Length: 183
Image 1: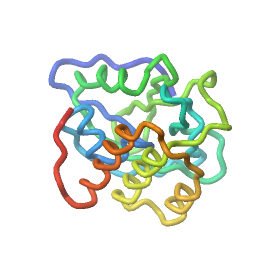
Image 2: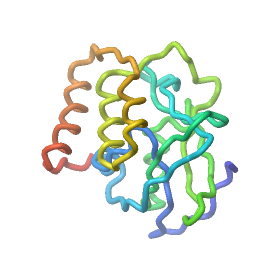
Image 3: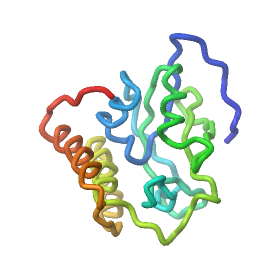
Image 4: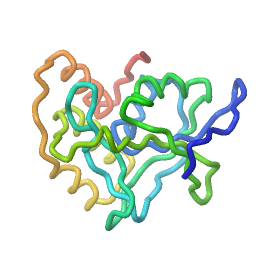
């Protein structure tokens, strides 16, 4: 992996590897606009955990290398000019770093990985956050064993009922085929 970004021109599309709440296409589209799903990717030797400290104090997803088993992700193409928006939303430089990866069969892609300084194994995700990750994993048909592992993650209820309700509506709309407006 390397941190250097290839140069992008207006109108270019770049590949983004999502593994957490952005697995759910409706969530990612609400954040950056039009996306294209390129494929599901198994990442042998990588693991998913919820140890990244979010701005709200809860656990968010990150990938860790040298794990036993595999993590699953989705390769999306997004407009290159939308990457700064996603960088801001994801907290680039304030918890996540961008890494460029080579995935066989795809152009280089970028992925957000938690900075070690922003990881805490004692954190738990909010219920709605885990539900977003799980909804995205189900949407893409990830293996049952992977879904079961996500389902087993302990959560806490978000005390911010408005934030919780907004995120649960996004999941509900996806499950019922209702389009959500773009942010």
